[in-house]
Image (cartoon, rainbow, N blue to C red; front, side, top):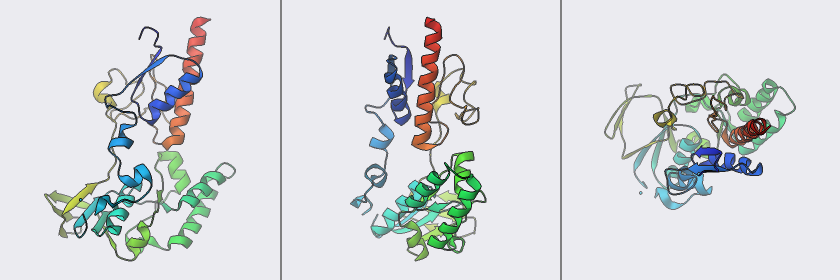
Amino acid sequence: MENVVVLIVGAGPAGLATAACLTQFSIPYAIVEREDCIASLWRKRAYDRLKLHLAKEFCKSFSGKSVLVIGSGNSGMEIAYDLATHGANTSIVIRSPIHVMTKELVRLGMTLAQHLPLNLVDNLLAMVTKFIFGDLSRHGIRMPKMGPMTLKSKTGRSAVIDVGTVGLIKRGIIQVQGSISKIMGNIVKFQSGDEITFDAIVFATGYKSTTNMWLKNGESMLNDIGLPTKEYPNHWKGENGLYCAGLARRGLAGIAADAKNIADDIKSMLGSMCG
């Protein structure tokens, strides 16, 4: 460890990307990881569709049972689809407005955004989305006021890529439920006043950063909930040699950008020290 210049905490995508960028500059580093493998969230805690991009029979430990999925991001929508197509009586809670798009539309939007203003791209995507999916508000799916590309740019929130879930919702195979007021065992009380009993409840509500639980004196970089205090794209650098990668909620592209910036900055710092 005497020759280690950089300590990377976490061997997930962000840690590995940073390590790769440091390697390009021949900067010695060490990675610490509490699990026994790299990318543990993908290897150990991912549902099959996320990990392998194909539907397996894992939903059959639910066939004939009543299942509620809480959360309508990509994970929640894909889990609901897999449950429904494997015989579960599936409901999903969609509380917040979401953009639903196809993979092809997302690619189109990202391509156009390199050449056109985001508001123009958003207007085009909105028209095509409505042509493909129709008016989804009647099925309990509301669109955000901010367009999909602008929303991603300002908040990091991605559009939901439909894998067939919307079609099942429109056909009534997947039931859309509103906000929850209370969960009492397997009984869920909704704000509408309805009470429904489920055999299983799946929480697809995301995760939060736990960095502040072990990092001390990181106030220069992270706020109380463990996210960067600075606005994107200047969020990745703190004080006293502290950096963060992948916390801007901008997916793998954001991770790659953070890793490159961090490695470049460390290289520059080392160069000035040697000089």
